[in-house]
Amino acid sequence: MQARLSSAIDLTGFRNEARDLLAHQVPPEQVHWETDVVTEADLFAQPVQGSDQARPSRSIPRAATAIVPSSFLRLCEVVVLHHDAQRFSLLYRLLWRLVHEPNLRNDPIDPDMLQAQQMAQSVRRDMHKMKAFLRFRQLPDQEHPGEVLHVAWFEPVHHIVEAVAPWFARRFAGMRWAILTPERSVRWDGRQLMFGPGGSRADAPAADAGEALWLTYYRSIFNPARVNAQLMQSHIPSRFWKNLPEGAIVPAMVSNAELGARSTGQAQAVGRKTGATIPIAPADAQPERQQPSKLDECRRCDLWQFATQAVPGAGPKRAPIMLVGEQPGDQEDLAGEAFVGPAGKLLDRVFDAAGLERRTIYLTNAVKHFKWEPRGKRRLHKTPAQREVDACHYWLDKELVSVKPKVIVALGATALKSVLGNGNAKLGESLGKAIQHDGRWVVTVYHPSYILRVPDEEAKRQAFNVMVEGLKLAQQLLERQPEEPKG
Ligand code: URA
Image (cartoon, rainbow, N blue to C red; front, side, top):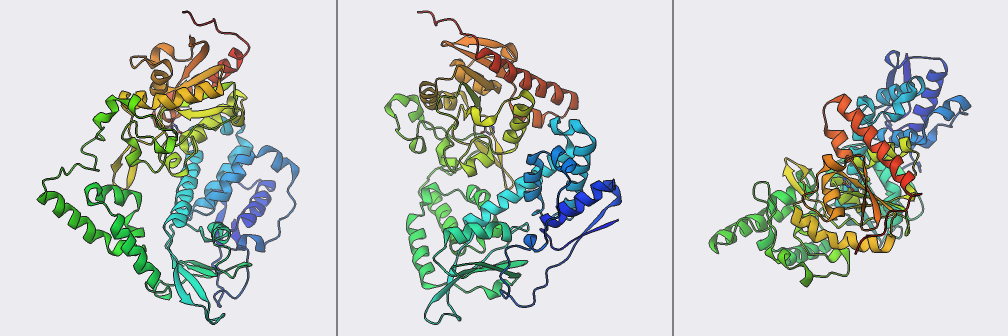
């Protein structure tokens, strides 16, 4: 059976078709999803608020809405933007399975669900890159003589133009601008967004005077002693460099920096990770000398140099339960928020299964900067060293003093060592147990990343259950006073 959608991102169409198919009990393997190509002949001719709105939503049978979790609908909103032609098949299969396999929503390791989450992650990353790496250039505005139109060229991986355009409209509300991409284009006239078909790079203007100024500034702030070409590549993949103004001058500056470093005998390792370790400044030995007042200014260890930003803890000011993870991951580092990536998604499932609401819990990490090592274009998590955990304990202490949680849930060994202030603490000895420390309860469970990583299905399920039981225990302990600390 064929299900036809009006565009690549026709979410309303997908929902309508999926509901009809479900109502008629059509199994996913019998459905072939097709999308129409949008063919507006006249670029920017029609004010369109996303083709998604072009199709009226049919009424939703109560039975279907009652059984599909709202988190799945949110997942659909992002996954439909993915470029994979199989995305609608995957989403309908998941919908079908959610209806026919009630346990699916509690299964943290289901391959379909994990695939959809990874696709959503890739789309979100693409949206972030578009916001971060798009550069406008100025053109005389043909429709408003004497005024300028800002035009940018960008090459997204996924179908994200409609989804990101409202962000640009808010951010650059007072400008007239257009964004051209190979597949779609969008224009903002100060009042409304107008979408059209794609363009080519040649349609975007060449460099302007403002850009020359920017390049002069970029050259002046470029520090050859700190250059790390590998790191620059992994933060901004090559496909973005070619469309960034500074992309044209960076290769020359990098090779000059390397020449300079060799001629002055400067260590090649400056600003670059050698092998598996990030060099740690000996200043770490005197952390009491460095009492930063703001987390973002923290230099108590060297991890700040490699992270996008520090990721603070967040949650209610007086949350009774504080959950301590290890360190922000790749997505947390970009978003500046703890547990928003895959580990956070898994944690949400644990909260659901334990009957807890995320918004009632204070979520933080033992280490506040992302430690990583490059693997191709990816940034792979690297376990923080004990000295980094110790240096960052300064911030965890501040959080404990201010939030005063009754129960701390330590996720994994790093969190446990930090919470107990004992670098020798062993996960296996504390797992699933409640111990008393400094006048409060500490419950230790696995880190969610362990569940995502461990290949064995049975081990995954057991670890998930340990986490759920640990969180249930944490709730029960809220009713029990720990003993007064001795001494
Ligand atoms: N893992 C953690 O320990 N913390 C986060 O915030 C994300 C992943």
